[in-house]
Image (cartoon, rainbow, N blue to C red; front, top):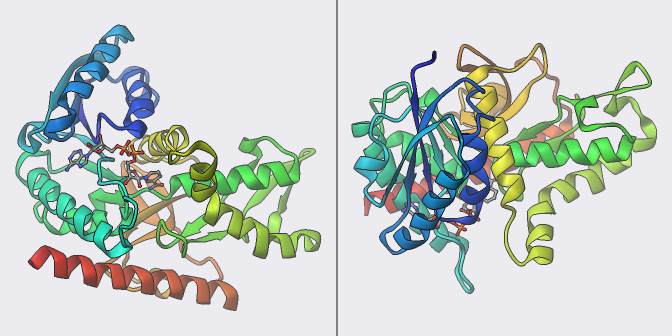
Length: 332
Ligand code: NAI
């Protein structure tokens, strides 16, 4: 039997966690034979709510779940952790500027980086979901210097899943018949959803989405803007931000990292940039990656056209700006 692992979810009393915890505890992410302990971290005022979540997890009666550790103490939350889902962050309140939100949230990730550094396993795989996800992941890594930088990632999988779903609908195929759509850059409105390398399987044959002239205009206009604005559309309709789909995407991201990707089917992850595709180094940038033995590598050799070059530049520049702001806040 497999050794049990310890998995932490922050923001454990929040709405994404509510969908996420069940999937983790029933084996959707680390495999159907992997027993685990769940550490649930939230802030002190949420401990009452968190107690209810713990009761429900118990009542799910899941054989893989060996125990639950609810806490408001990062030291306890991150103790001996193998995998971390950093979901908890301050939500944007009315009248709050983007800058204020960034300042409040990067401080949380500084503290959690320090706690990971001190208490988690050095092999820990960290997925940052809380926004601004890319920059939070960068700060978290910076304050956890004893853990390799490659072990920190930011979630753009929800954007990838949205893009894949749009393509499946457009081409009238099942979701599994669309592969290799890419999300480049920041998990923000400057992200670049790129379908130029996406492949659709239909009627037994494979075709590249980009080869279909009839779809060229749709791909550059509606497709990109629908994916970019999907989060806002969900908020407008539901009066709350995406949670079920965000939790599912977090599971997809971590499962592919933990168990590996299959064949030449790549996925998008925000990871530390080595300058690939002329992106700024040392920011967390979403790239297409392949994963083997829990190590990701950036897919190389994809040809960028002028439109793509400009899109990558834009989102890279935004990430550079966020990084500068975040570093200034952390030095205060
Ligand atoms: P929520 O407001 O329902 O839950 C957030 C939870 O985090 C709350 O329980 C809060 O008390 C907790 N929290 C705040 N500060 C904390 C701290 N220092 N330590 C531990 N817990 C803390 O929010 P929801 O809907 O669950 O979303 C969480 C985050 O995920 C938000 O930042 C949201 O913007 C982001 N998000 C990211 C997506 C992505 O694709 N990367 C997609 C959807 C949401």
